[in-house]
Image 1: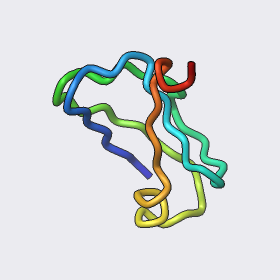
Image 2 (image 1 turned 180 degrees about the vertical axis):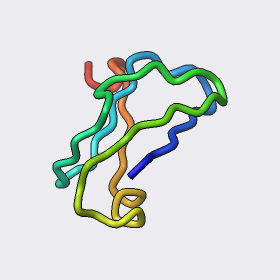
Image 3 (image 1 turned 90 degrees about the vertical axis):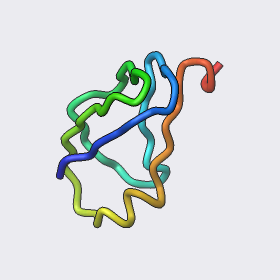
Image 4 (image 1 turned 135 degrees about the horizontal axis):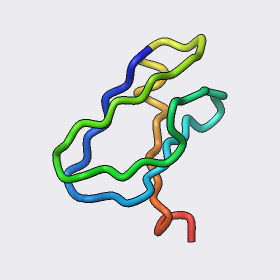
Length: 64
């Protein structure tokens, strides 16, 4: 499955988390640039709707 991620503003070292799901992504942390798409490939057994509801993007700022 391919996921397209887009940010309203720059997000340096943004990481994706799916709460209770174990998802294997092509990239763990990415730099999201203003209104540019970033494409991730995921291996999982979940539906797109389940991923959409559980996706959380965090930056290093959020973790600290």
